Image (cartoon, rainbow, N blue to C red; front, side, top):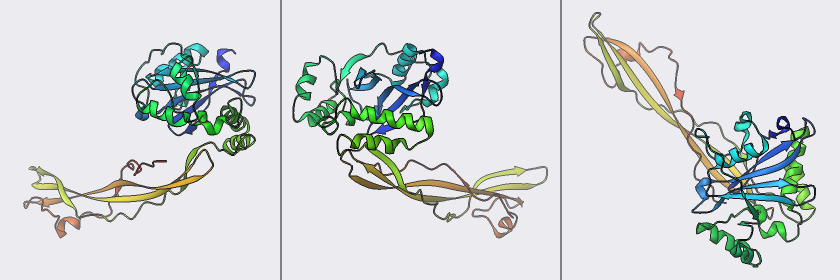
Length: 315
């Protein structure tokens, strides 16, 4: 495919601690998914864990897979950009966990991968043959072993489904959404339902966010004073703050199609500033009635950005 035909899709998929970026080929309106780059959340990775997996579609129903361990996500992205000739104009489209920090050297070619382990890993062969495969993988990942705990490779997706059904379903959903704006998630879920009673895990805001609560401004306190000797007055500045809260509910869908909810709240601080001119007496604290009478119709409270939503949801 010519370099100009590669695009990085902004239609991302997040399943648990992994974010999937589709890489597309073909002209507008006829795009096909060439591959998915799955990047693990650095906060959940330890030791020599596999942190990135590149799934490349084939003419059949299988996918060619390569992986990297303990590797910076942008180095992996630069490697794929180098292999495919993807330009930096798509850098904002990758579903990354961390912002790009300067120039990153390519990570080097990935290692063949299969179902949680590097191909040829003797431990991986034993684990994948075990009926306790999923719990063993989770344990190895927590110990920092070179493995990956990826939901679409768990038993629910592989017992009744063939040919990497989850990836095929994701591809169908992404292609439909990119080409026509269709509901890609619904199409992917329907494709999965053809082989098993499973769903693509997903987390979404099901209620809210609610409006911000009322701003009950606290008492004004002196925060600045400047004397003008030429005119003989003080410029007195007073500030008051309030805290506002809003709420939302998240819903998470599991592999087995059951759901759970989690309630979160977010806070922000609003600040109001007023000033007055006082002669000789200086700046009273709290402000006097004479000072307050000068405030008039000020700009009102200025509110900052909301903080992080809390508590974290443990699905």
